Length: 102
Image (cartoon, rainbow, N blue to C red; front, side, top):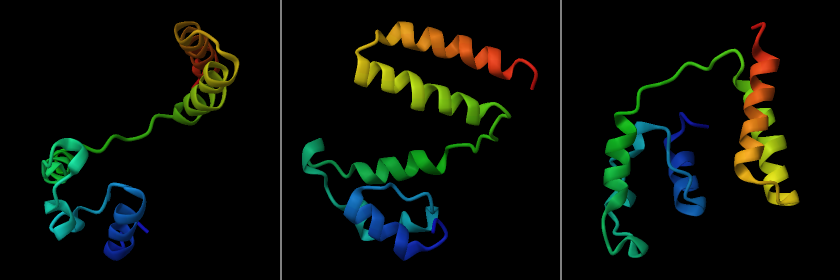
């Protein structure tokens, strides 16, 4: 999907999913002004920034951290009203415990 230029551009148009495929950045869509940003052609800036992002290799514990933060801590904050700092502190403790032997 990310290698298909037309699919990436269609998703960008319909759901604002910024393309990962850098070959899309020359499309006219990037030159359109954005009303909610005061008419700026901000997508050109977004594309320039995206071109300069260096890839990051995933760490062994990333899947564990994602699960703890997104499936547990975030839901506790949103659904149960837990304090954000408390939820993050607990998430940090759990991540450290579950990844200490990796």
